Length: 121
Image (tube, rainbow, N blue to C red; front, side, top):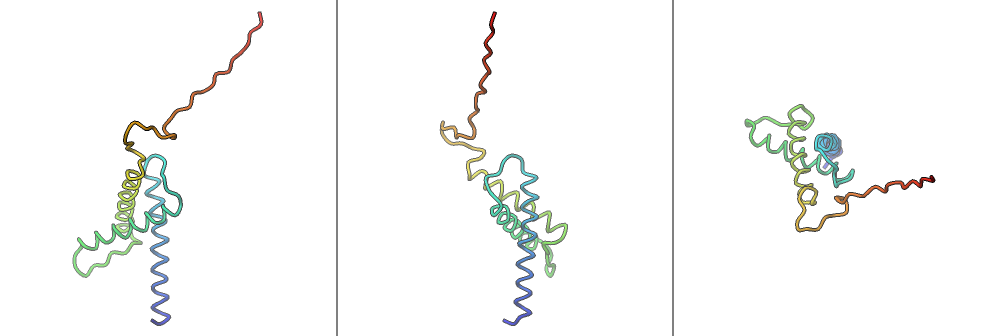
């Protein structure tokens, strides 16, 4: 492998990582509610969503046509793929559905303490 091919692969990898980060942030901005993942999960979901979305679009497009992630259609299918992955991540993480009668701590409501005032007559 010569230097030109290595530089091409490094550029391609950095493009996918950068674009996946943007797509992951856009998907988290669109999805309502708190998310269980952090920054690394956002990047990984964006990259995986972009890969899956662009691969599906490439599969169903006409022969000889290349789908690039940095385009309007690449962003659209990447965001859709990231939203699907984020939805599965929330479902599998137990964010929306709780099994059994156990109520996790984050779902409990705290009671407010009322200030007691002493009146002197």
